[in-house]
Length: 152
Image (cartoon, rainbow, N blue to C red; front, side, top):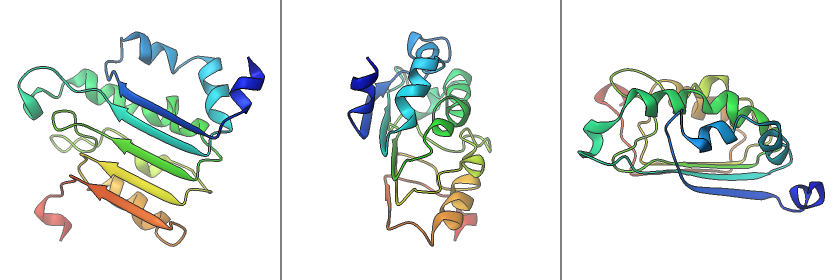
């Protein structure tokens, strides 16, 4: 198993359930998952949609799951050069009701060169993260992202 884990650089996870009680959430807290992430240079993470009434259906579970990504996922990517985090139309990444779900300010990715966000709110911690990494990033890509008027 170890040779398989060491044999690739990029990891893509599509439609990751964002419920903290889901099996996927439990899986990303295992030692095997942490070992899997350690040597990855690229992570492409796409959240699953939230069923129901669109953007107004963002739940506390969704927010709690996102808030744990720094300690359950991002902190185990010391060699990451490319990070892509994609929300969905009804499952945004970033602030919701003035709450910043992913503490981007605590991320430490010294080798990061490409940062991509899709369906995200760009404010607060996200903005600080981009400013901090601006000098070392080769590319920043923001698609379907939103900011409030105070970001001008």
